[in-house]
Image 1 (spheres, rainbow, N blue to C red):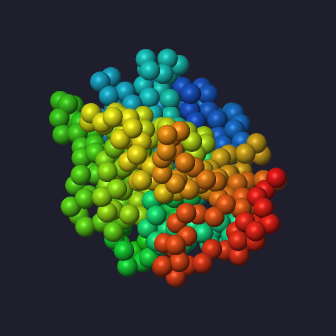
Image 2 (image 1 turned 120 degrees about the vertical axis):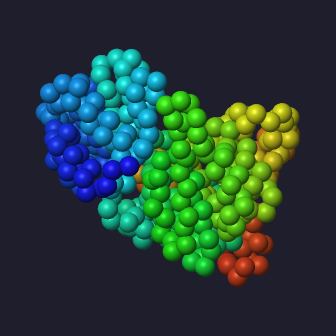
Length: 361
């Protein structure tokens, strides 16, 4: 891996067509669809820019530089690259023929300013009442899945929720490519390793997860569940490792659990669906659903409690829903209220008053 300062100089040279956008703090994503087509995202809106690379060869030189920096193969045998830039920006690149119009690249940039709970309140992504509940849930070690579509703010919310973990706890983070920037003192970040040119030495999410269980974690944070590691996380959640945090691509809370079921079945363990569903209902305590809205803003749309399973499937109870642009209580009270009370927490008054006056229309 080459030193960062040398890499930065080389990066500015080979990526000169997008250098201004890389320096523009208002740009959250840069999308390159071959050498002649570049889009940038600002405030959730995409626009095409006039910049272009002189040739596919020039763009490919930049992509190979990124691959060299992160120490991952990127060639005809390994045509997909996942990595990050020195500033933490996430990179996903593809080579032809997977991308017929030429090398393709997506750079997801993250704000240099740490996105805190207070900032999310300022943006209207959360409400004071919902923050009070989430603070209690995190501190009482409820297992929380942050779900949403691409670009809906899952990672930003997960980073912000990490600030609610008691500071004396040891947090272990597992990711494919390092992306999370947890607001903690004691954090051990682990990252997967792809196979080498001879197909050897790959270390995946599941390998890291098994190692994590022997590294004395107080909390396990899994950057994103994509496949069979869902089964490992479910089993960890149900075997005494409370307070886990993770993200999943899903549109609604019900879809979140369906996706987790599907991915757990990819874990290679013969397990009846009924048994898996029961474990999942016991493992996941809450789903926090995020979305990107038409104006480009992002926010939480649901805070949903998973109250086990029955003959019809998972029992889901929405505690907060977004209505008229605000995240408000539904009138339902969480089944975990006795647990919160045992830890000295009381539910926000607005949740109780809504429950007494009746749910939202």
